[in-house]
Length: 469
Image (cartoon, rainbow, N blue to C red; front, side, top):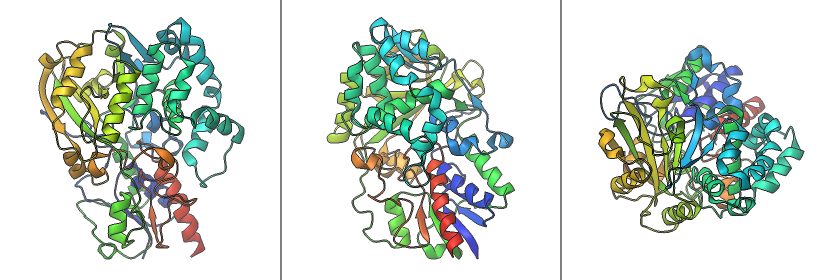
């Protein structure tokens, strides 16, 4: 009998398996797709030689992850590549604000009236970032806070809505860039703890940047899988699990799946019936004949580029995707240009480019024209660079990754109490009513992102259980 079986070979499932194997437990992973990866895959979606990431592409939480940083993933091929700028946010007048590794460069891009306010906001936390990140990403009761005072101070700033935090800024550049940071988790700007979301992304950039993985995000998943195999674990792909009886006998079963799928497979009935899924996304992967022709200079050097004219436009787009059945006319876009830092992702002189906008959960329309009209506002002539495109709306994303219910790449709404207490209001979010069944997906704290911390935290709950039996 195995000690643990993990269902789903995304970053969280693989991290949970690695953590258990490192402690001497026998582990096997079962994955429905033909390769490991989940939200961290790389495929030729458009033309030969163009390597795209179907989901996550830039990794501020990955390089800052306490779980990943303590694993020898570089020995297994993971290499972080940094663009000169982690992120840029262009404006219609041809200027741009930036999120740089340098706090000073970032503050200066906001203008004199907001530079000081931004410095005061981030510089109080940056020296203690590693401890803060560990405490923030380990909640709830998976580890005692190492610096509860700093964590409490962070909570005082971050738990109110981001709209409160943005009152510190007088001009639109700082407000807009910060609104875009919050929008990475598809949360309305006025929601609970949205200030913390924006602040975490900013601090992550200043601490270690927003890199891409050389060769694509698949490198992260492949490194985890290779390390697991060296630890004695096994990985089985092309193995769809429909019920617990499809799996070999084990002392514990750990699911890197949506709560909906877990309830169905494990026979938990309506245990997660109140779990809410959030907005979906409409994503386009591009093969380009050259770099994106940004009007502003800064985005040409950035790995990630946010697209939204001002904070009001971003807020309206988020509200439309969250509270209506229609896609926003001017969607807020998150774009990534991996080949700026990793030219090997495309043939010589060509580029890969990635963009998505938020849409209502389960939306079945085509957002291509709206996305490209937004891009043309800030990069005139963009369409002329397009060699090929691969589009995926919520139905296609859900078909590729069953965790993305209705196209929700966060695996659950990141709003209200569900931002922190997911998938249920519980001090033990990784446990289920079945004593041998656990959940470790992005539906558990600390939530979405390629960081492995949900798997790391869940593994702690599992090995404590295994040691008791």
